[in-house]
Image (cartoon, rainbow, N blue to C red):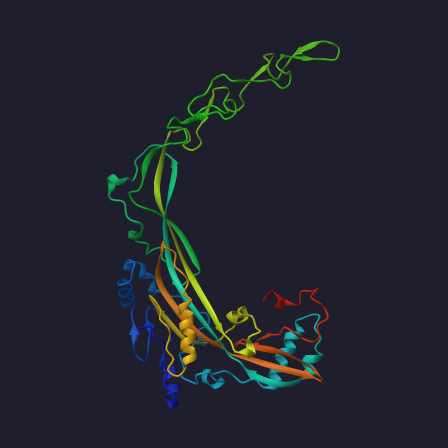
Length: 417
């Protein structure tokens, strides 16, 4: 069920290429010539897994997202165990004129790079060093229960007397389910019949708490009324002394020398902010649901392309050799390539761990080949190499011989890679 698409060798290859369809465009997964795995088969396969996952969760399989570059997708082509030639996946062979022009255009966008090496130096070697990209995406749904509280202002509640409280994995969230393999989505859903009225623990259901200003340090539940503070203007005298020896009544305390507590008016109590003075709280259970894609990527590069960072290949456009979508993917099978079989097994073995509070919805395993051309240019005793990567023909070069900015301007964009 999870084997990749295989084409016939020899003269039937071209015909088989047209016959097969890209996996994942619809609700079905195609495996082999004329065979089709339906959504129901994926659901039934997951039903026998542990822990059990509700079949309703797999409703999203009917709407898988479209691939990023449908025109670049391909099926597995049988070929040499060590790799694929340009003709096998339809890659256009670059001549020296096109290669030099790509380099000149790349250098022209760097303000402090000289164009002389790109225009004058001799192309000594053109080498194909294609790179294989393996990806295993695990789409999971994670659920956890959180408690929400708010002041109870009266009225009816949806409590256990209205029905049994549903378990977190019994909730039907088909209306909230996203497309498969979205990076992340989060939603909150109230669990039916989970509301309850509780006493406010902050004020012991009194609705008021001890004033923290005039009754600081008092024991819980004990307070004193009519606590006064000394007037800072007259220092408790009630009179303001002047330089001529006369006194006037302090206007700040009206001659009393003491002031009421600015927080509670010397009542000793203030309204509880947790329950808004009601003394009771309405609590409910909320299901916090997260959908996300765990991704494991691996690059298999020859020694000729080993100096290129993996991130460059991740951004490049290539040809998809297989695309397996199933509840749990197994390694792909390539009839004539032991190296690709081993590479696929290594990608599957690196599966990302699933949190205990999550369940696996679906997995997708892809292997792609990114065409990479390494070009070496030389002049006298000096030489340098650069790479033309992917079908978009992006140029990557690290050691260009004619750079004058010494890293002080923004033209060295490759440093961000």
